[in-house]
Amino acid sequence: MTRRRIAILGSTGSIGQNTLKVVRHCRPAFEVKALTAYNNIALLEKDIREFRPEIVAVAKAHLPALRSRWKTVRFMDVDEDLDALVGRRDVDIVVLAMTGSAALGPFLAAVRAGKTVAPANKEALVMAGEIIMEEARRCGSRIIPVDSEQSAIFQCLEGQRREDLKRVILTASGGPLKDIPVKKHHTISVEDVLKHPRWCMGAKITVDSATLMNKGFEVIEAQRLFGLSVHEVDVVVHPQAIIHSMVEFCDGSVLAQMGVADMCVPIQYALTYPRRHKGARESLDLTTARICTFEKPDMVKFPSLKLAYMVAGKGGTLPAVLNAADEVAVEAFLKGQIKFTTMFKIVEKTVLAHRNGSAKNIKEILAADGWARIKAREALRKAA
Ligand SMILES: NC(=O)c1ccc[n+]([C@@H]2O[C@H](COP(=O)([O-])OP(=O)(O)OC[C@H]3O[C@@H](n4cnc5c(N)ncnc54)[C@H](OP(=O)(O)O)[C@@H]3O)[C@@H](O)[C@H]2O)c1
Image (cartoon, rainbow, N blue to C red; front, side, top):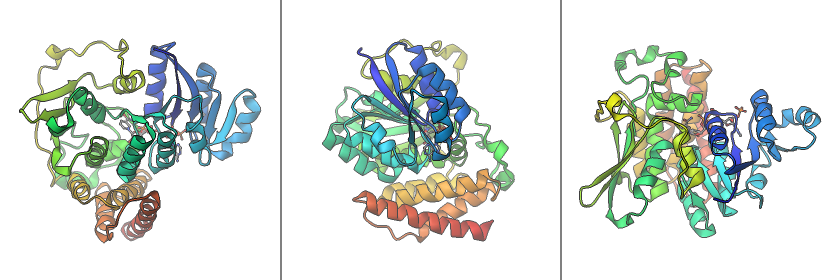
């Protein structure tokens, strides 16, 4: 395999750090061309020292100090310059490990520059997945998902005919609140939510996993990545997180992708695709795992998933509205401004107030996103 030059957007986060682990493990298969972070400068500088990237982007406030300490690195403003960074000729793969809707611009720019894009970020696909996929086709860009469920589906579909696909089945661990009665949900603290039983992730996605909004986003993400209708995407709760998702074909065969619950596995697959590289972890031991259980998700206990399914069915600008309202609500919950159960109320109120419209271009999507943030903040002020 020729050495691949990668740009990691969000290198200081959970996915970003796992990507650097993969790079370390696969040496010398990859060259880290660019790293981007926001505020975690201590970790970023540690990684600059180890990986020697040529380009680094951070929040503007940190630029003067960094420029004075690292004379050979070219620094950029993360809020302004990511589109230019991902389009550089010396970047082959863009890993989208940054959180939130800020990833939409660089995602589109990378696709339009014909890059291979490895998105962990799901917000951009939820907001504008149809446009991103259409642009990818037009510009010859390859999108290889990093999110473990989407990677599982991608792997199960390799070598298969699209017309033979009956449905995909996303697995959900059920999150930290799976066995907590719904009447206790209003007492749940930020600390309770941040204790995820299977995956160690950033705060936003961990909260979304507790409400199952994350699974709802994955329903929309799968629709966009694989061109599916909402009726072709099912969710099943599988607490052991051994099967990362499944695909059923028209003849009744079901293919499942299994493995240890470690994000390095799908990240490494995306970076080395279509080849595979020896893994860093031991093999999955099915004799110690022993039990694999499956159950239907409880849509009464976790209304966010039901709401996301409704949004997935309607499409248009609603997915962008769902995403924006959720970002506002989760941020408020993490800051201790609202209760766990208030998050859903804010998101539902915003989604139901929206007059759905066409989402044919980014302008329409950003307008819906902006509208939803205003509405969600109004609902937040009333609820807080
Ligand atoms: N973690 C997982 O296992 C996992 C699995 C599947 C999908 N995902 C998705 O992958 C994405 C990243 O998740 P994560 O858990 O790695 O998040 P995280 O740990 O919170 O890391 C977020 C990264 O994004 C940077 N960042 C934050 N705001 C930014 C902005 N406005 N512009 C540019 N960079 C910004 C952060 O920089 P600083 O830290 O330097 O401030 C950090 O590097 C999310 O979309 C998530 O849904 C994550």
